[in-house]
Length: 282
View 1 (cartoon, rainbow, N blue to C red):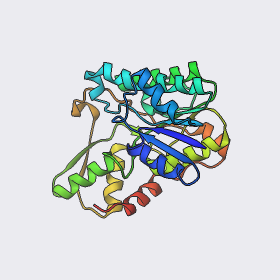
View 2 (tube, one colour):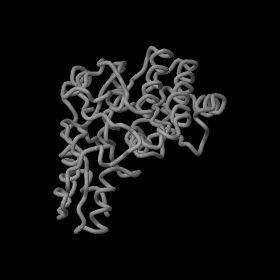
View 3 (cartoon, helix red, strand yellow):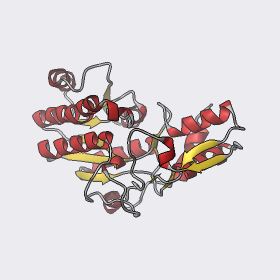
View 4 (spheres, rainbow, N blue to C red):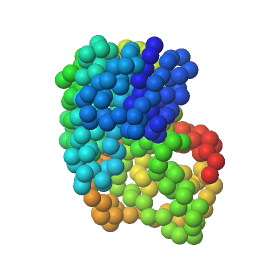
């Protein structure tokens, strides 16, 4: 089986390529290889690999930056996704599209189901939702995989940010929001889940995250605790940060379709974090 991975050198894409290469022929592409918003470039580069499936990990992920670069966010997340879906349509192959918890507005206090109504609060979420719509409109064989709060070895993420601040000055207080709730998710676990998913050929929309949810404040405290770092963490509210993009207050995803299809949820986020911290050398 030949698989193309867009965003193949990104945080998730790197792990997807590594996991999938154990049993498949994998070709990873990144932003330097072609302009995903350009139909001709995308069509030519992806079609030349004659893939049996495309995993679309590439995306514009700067949530605050999207507020001032809306055209760029939509070019990558909406038009780029449409272009990948069109290639899949022409080749008659399935597609995996990685989406986000930020398609929801966070107005509830229980985890979101896969078919709950989306209502994104920010440009990033709107652009990712537009990508979802293109996939659904163009293809019948697709996996739309919403995930959340990703961290992994390759790329900037919240875990690295917390550890970096602690290493620079552990006597300083770390201010972290405690009024945003979500699912911390280890990219290696997500990549393994995608491997299971594409083998199943159970197409549809899935929420795939590590089990459980917490606030960013609780996440930061657990990172430092598991790393054995003594540092004061102070809870603050989102408004105090004056971020450009509004974030949902509760965007935890319930992995209902995943558990119905495969029985067991992914491991708890605290267990995944423990493994990740063991694997890194900072």
